[in-house]
Length: 358
Image (tube, rainbow, N blue to C red; front, side, top):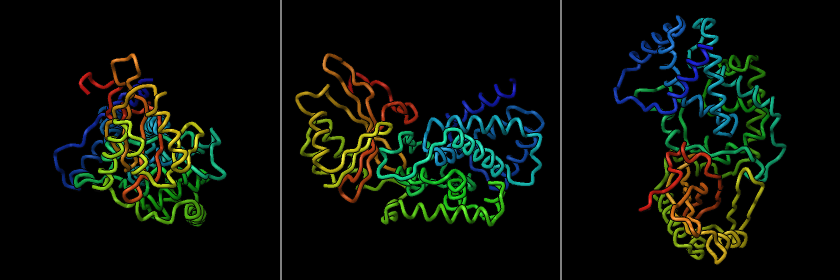
């Protein structure tokens, strides 16, 4: 129980750790990590906590890619670190410590996927992925590579976009793991095979099948997802979206929307296709029968522009967290809106209630 308490404490710290302002050379970092590993193997809980802080966020992103759920990824990382702490005595240095953690995390996710037996046979829209959750960009930035962390996993738009994650839910668990490790993380074939506990030939076969499925289920315009940060046009589109919704201007909201706009609301199975369907939603939100007035805050999720909506119901004096809209731009218009509940507002650094002056 002491080990479990130590790990849980280190995991709690991981979620609030900020990147160090002190620049270190790659050699210095490697030496520091080696020292921490040796100390942790010797039972030093503080040393293990520092390792958890160092690798916790990128492990969380990895588990999120496997599971497509922010909350489930949190649980998977806690289990990963607990398993790592328990197994430290058996770490013999035959692989990099980071790779060892990834192997544990991947197996945790594979076990979880086998337990829930959750996989799509086909997918027409995000409405068919009720477990899908957004991932805050501010946390993705913690896992992105910086000069003093050259081994950290890159997080670009293509490999974290909601459509990409949803398509991966069509893959059997081991194919999904092979695809993520090889095509997203860029690991070589032998390391991928080692992580999966299989032969290189079997790992390559799983990868090829996964690639075929992904190619069949992703849009051909994947190149437009490659930007690592929001463009000026994306930000302007988000500003227009916020302005239209705060003013309750349905005409303005429609003007910035594609004719074939698609709106989904995981975990609910609702699917609204096209402008006419969108008009029905806008009438409900802005019309005479609306529940109240809106205030929106800009944010970003999965490398896409997003808006956090707060509703002040009639008779109430406060704007309260209501929903999160993640926008997929297509040039100057919005091609898709994925609406989530307010459950992850804290992870986005967003308040539950806006100040009186907002």
